[in-house]
Amino acid sequence: MKSNAPGQLLGFSIQFPRALYHLLRSAPKDVVCVEVFGDVATLKSDGEILAEEDKSSIVGNPLTDRSTDLWKTFSNWITAINSGLIDVERTKFLLYSNKSGREGIVNKFSSAQNQSDIQSAIEYTKKILSDLKPEQEIWNYYDFVINKNGILLTKIIHSFELQIGNGAGYDDVRIEIQRKHVPEGQIEFIMDSLNGWLQKVLNENIAARRSAIISWELFDRQFKLLFDRSRSRELIDFTMHYSKEHDKVQKQVKTRPLYLKQLEAIELTEEEILDAVSDYLRADVNLEKWIENETINEEIASDFEERLTKYWGNQRKRIKITDKQLDETEQGKLLLIECNSRQETIRDMTPPASTIPGTYHALADELLLGWHPNWERLYLKNKGG
Image (tube, rainbow, N blue to C red; front, side, top):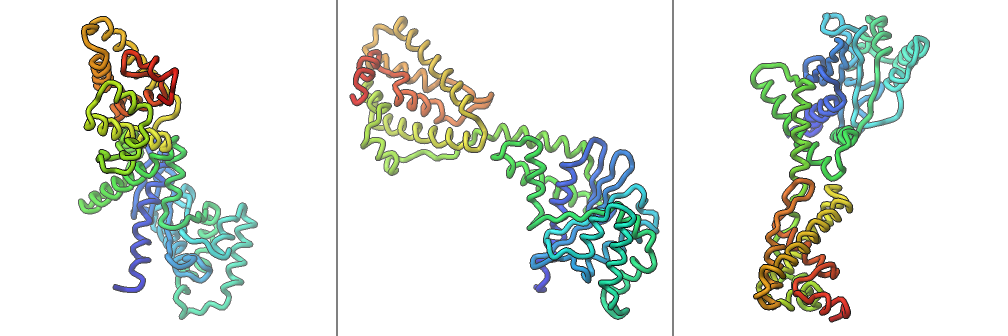
């Protein structure tokens, strides 16, 4: 493999996050394209064009004063203008680099605010590169830009901007997704999904000999679809069933927290106790993860617990009336079964199966509810019971 192959691959692949960045910043009726008006371009609904060239490196600044990439970029823009591909009066020129470096010619071009600044930048360029010889690699590009198309160059600089990113180009994408009010915990999912979708659409267009373009409308539909999907996938189960040999399960059994004592009071089997411990641990982990990922907040969690508690209270009253022939342990088991079988949602989504029984065990551990008909007398007066 050639030594510069990784750099060449980065140079091509960086166009995808850049296209995604521009799609996130685009407006209705805009179109973003790749390898049509340069590396990446946005065709605005009013006819203006944002033409971007992307330069990347894995070792250092790709836009030094004497870099071929720098002068070839300006040469290509001038050629595109002269051929009628783009209108210099209606085009903004953006040069993106994934590496920063010592400020030089390109920075002066980018910071020029008026005609005086532009002329000063050009004069500075001529002075810095006054020792260039025709046999040097960049001479043809430099000569074409500075000496043969000076007037066009001033117009380009007037609408020119240098943008410095870093790495593979995804940091800017993350920021734009965050600006869409996407929760922090969902940014990576949406970015990765959009990036995969974007590459698929562009590659399919290229393979079919169509222009590699994506409209704002197409992107908007995909973004909304993924955003909705990210919300529907939010209550994912971060856990697996805890076996009875698991250290955390054994610790619970050994310490006998209140929720287990409450289950013992209604004479659950050892297997049922171990299942309860697993549900309790899984619900605790998932709840913590969902809050950490901003899937839910404390208020939503409290509302969920309140709804479970209300259901428990209603079932307790019903059992006392309709099943009073059962002994106390049987009434407690029936109440537990009814509550564990309850179908309840969190933000209109069905949580993992362990969530409802596990949350009930957590509430029982805090002595906010119980299973035995006389649980208050058994535990509230002596919490160490």
